[in-house]
Length: 226
Picture 1 (cartoon, one colour):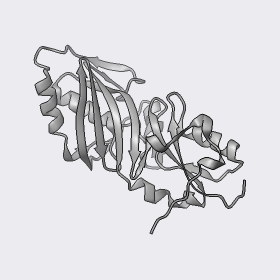
Picture 2 (cartoon, rainbow, N blue to C red):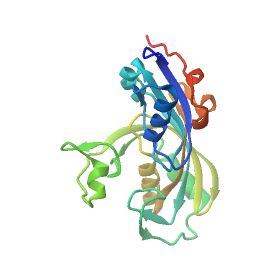
Picture 3 (cartoon, rainbow, N blue to C red):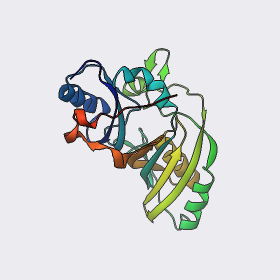
């Protein structure tokens, strides 16, 4: 393939591999080294990953600004040290009769709009030059100032306790695992993120994405930014 290749590729990332694994597959299939991605997904997460091909890697900051949308599941009654299903359980709670659908919906409604979030330790943010997740692996916890993010949509699609399925549309910098934790704390029974599927990044949707097995030159699409 020409080293002048330029564009993006929408990939539907499966569970169990990293975003960088997908980039490596693309590099081998396309014969290019200059490939990156516009926003990582954890190994347990699935869904839309935008690959930047060739000179498009210089446009990563444009993609970072895009809003995102996810389908997610939170599990009530437990908290983990990572805020998701891959972490160690650090607290367990009884889900009492007071945890009704009405109460859950009421708490969810309080998180719509502009909110403050303390970034989780298992994030790629830096503290004195080190990634937070690198510190977390060593058992180090540091103070993280809260950041303002915006939740545009937060719709519950199913309640089957201890699980709650929902759709969330949010601004850049929003951590869904932290949203699950904060909702669980507000309910008084704890919660962690047990499923995450990214369906949209800006104008791009997962329905347009190709599976990893179909990564090839024909899947590259041009991009146009004013």
